[in-house]
Length: 609
Ligand code: MV4
Image 1 (tube, rainbow, N blue to C red):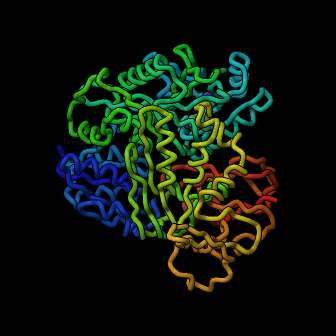
Image 2 (image 1 turned 180 degrees about the horizontal axis):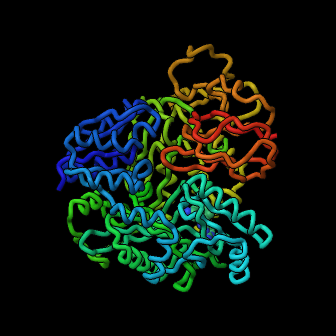
Image 3 (image 1 turned 90 degrees about the vertical axis):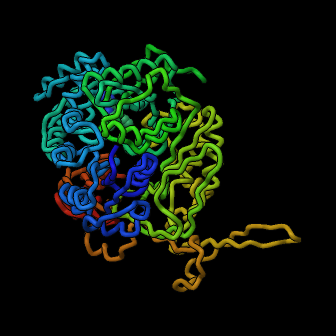
């Protein structure tokens, strides 16, 4: 076993990995940027090294800085967590070739292979794992797209060889669109992944997103730990994950799990990994499940521990992170496939510092005035923050994960309602109100939601209502005067009452209003920095950066017409490439950024007229 592991990450996942280290009796080393000097992961570690400025490219993504810190600390292994360097084959290779330091993850070769989509499709095909009907070689011409459409029908997905996770995919609805979409897909592939190679798949209109957790060692043992259902997504960002899938029969579950196992075996894959599948929905009556003949197709492999791994840990009682470390240390998996049993039901809620009623706008700052997480039976919290901490907004907006376990889905949902009601956070907005809404949502509760549900079907008004009812921040309004809520406790005839008073914010000058976090005056979206009105001059709908990051590419030019839902530009943040999407259609009046620009949260990007 290793003696000391450096965790090349921050926040909750860094603490999660350190907890596994502690359980194994291994010392921990944190790295941190200037923005994270007081970070929870720094507090938790045995020792910690500053590796650079807030900008991730100069700290958490700096290969040399991370490896140097490991050498300085005398660490004998590096765990990358998720995001940042976790799926960077070049970094894995650099760690592997540094003497005395082991990479905790799959081989650099596996990571590279998973990144090349047609390669991965070929390997799966060889292992008899169904892939989405389509090509396993790149396509070049419009004629090839037409030919595919004639044979398989429309719509067709054109995907970038280097894509994944919601990027580099174009949908062709009819033969007339083939030429334009092929060109667009190639252009995006070239701009974002340095690779204009694209391939084709039949586009499934409303699939479920099912992923299978794999653990494999370097001695040829491959186990699957069941599946997670991640169908509840907003613009490719997962918000709630659960397992087992409420849609699969046990026969179908076994088939998909066995397929993932064959795939991992064929690819000589080791360490933890996730095999993603699309499962085609069918017309189902209440309580009916997808049977063994339902269509399922391999989509891609994630070569890292995932945010939602905890769902599987709760179901199987297997510590996946601990196994990642043991496998990297050369140990052999000591349980058989038949020993893996899924116990009950688990749901994970991502606690993001965002306001769901305001288009999930991330908080631009704030302090955890109150942080009082839930507990009790079936409740697990993975977090790194504590009451009194300032919110760090330089990376992503996820501050914690609540994972709830129950004997069945019904008990799990009841416990989830209870746990989310217990969760008391003040000083920053969170999407707890959104989660509480989902737990009363007919579609979610019945388990019939698909990947389209949040983006296309959920009524925005219900988000506002839930925010009003359960949120600590007011629903944004167009009115100038915001109200501030203050809580008082009174006793009337010996009985205790909690009283909320609403007052106009203007009545409080400065911070003369005491210490309640709830009394903070909310800043209107994008208005935080005050000086950004100078950056754009055109009138119209200003599209702003949702997070700090780097502009990887701009897809539009001034004068272009865009439709709602079009990708305007791509913003890299936390190593993830995020599409910036037009909320409304319009004409591009002004473009405030260009490729390579570094932007802060709230900065204007584009003005639409
Ligand atoms: C698809 C698809 C339908 N048909 N491919 C989106 C992320 C990228 N990694 C693959 N994605 C999809 N590929 C075919 N042939 C639908 C999606 C998709 C999706 C997939 C998983 C989870 C959420 C999604 C949301 C929208 C679209």
